[in-house]
Image (cartoon, rainbow, N blue to C red; front, side, top):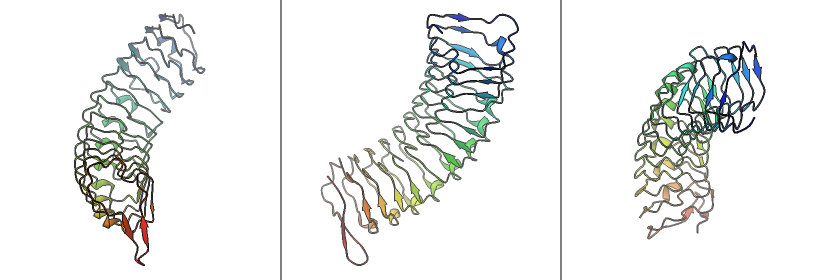
Length: 324
């Protein structure tokens, strides 16, 4: 399909029930798309209208019978400012459904109230969304990787409707730099916190971890580059025995940190405290049970003036951390 196409109208009663992959992908000049003749569609392939960057509005209400869409349905429609979903649409949402729709400022998720799961990058890089009401998604039990990643325009986010979630993929809120407050209580059923869960949420200045008290391990980048945090109560994480790389890496605003609640840790990944540039003192004695410490444990902690890096086990055997 040519990129110079500016409008597409299908004449007659097109009784198509399915369309193949990439039917309109990359039609960057397309500004008008009337889907009325596709009212009989039940499924569309991957990247149906992906990268149609000239579209500014799209009405999906004619697709009332659509139940299945492939990956990347609207991926890269960077000019799209208005999107209307049909209330009767009961689609299954796989990967990159709205990924990179950077011009969207609002989105009504009500037509997706039937969803119990969504694939990777559902709303990833929707950078101009300033408000998002998740209330319709009360049935969700799992979300894929990068669900709201890089939605930098969001300043507030209420996770209450997601209280049935048991699984979240990598980068759930990664790069949501504008969010200043976050209540994690609705995520109390999540049993597995994966990579970069809250990575680069630089607007957060405080965070209550109470709802994560059941966790015994977290993957890499949990609080990576959350540079707005100045203090953090780790008491809810008292059951942790292992943390991945960059757990506190890049938390440059932390001025103090009490590691006492982490006394059960036996292993920490690289860059555990790397880049915590404002820490002036640190007591590592609560970490006496550590048997493994990754590289760059204290990399970039430029204001620390004194530190005892020797860990002693119950039998007196010394264990030294790997450090710059």
